[in-house]
Length: 215
Image (cartoon, rainbow, N blue to C red; front, side, top):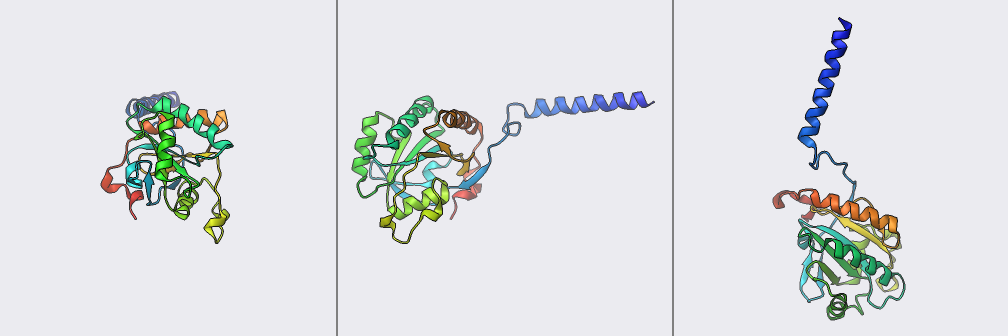
């Protein structure tokens, strides 16, 4: 009798396991999800074409985010060179976008960013360059994307300068996922590439219910 009970138990466990594999294999529910560590707060900046760009323009896309400045001779060229490699890999993905913010809006006007973007020979709808008010740009880096410690903020914005090689990855619903990635470390770039592929497979929430983009 005990052997029959054990046999039936094993049978039903295997049956349930097979059912779960059939139902969830290849879906978002089957995959382990990277954690959400923040979300994109509302903003309005100016892109390289002089047009307004807001968090709504990122909605429904997986977005790779960084901060740089065009006159940088240190980490920025290496960082954006590695970003360019990622751009080349995902440029044909309709659900992917890269968003670069300037750390130096006094020098990096829209026209300066336009020349910089043109030099990269990219699709400027897929890789966008943003400028705006310095305090707003820095708050977005620290509060939304967690690319800099908010404690670095000092009373006078003119005394601040943000300089970081870290990248943020935003999912289709405006959630910052998986932590920050070091653009100068190949292991981080490999993980970033894998995470982008995973997020591209996830479905975006309906616009009306995507609360993260609401003020």
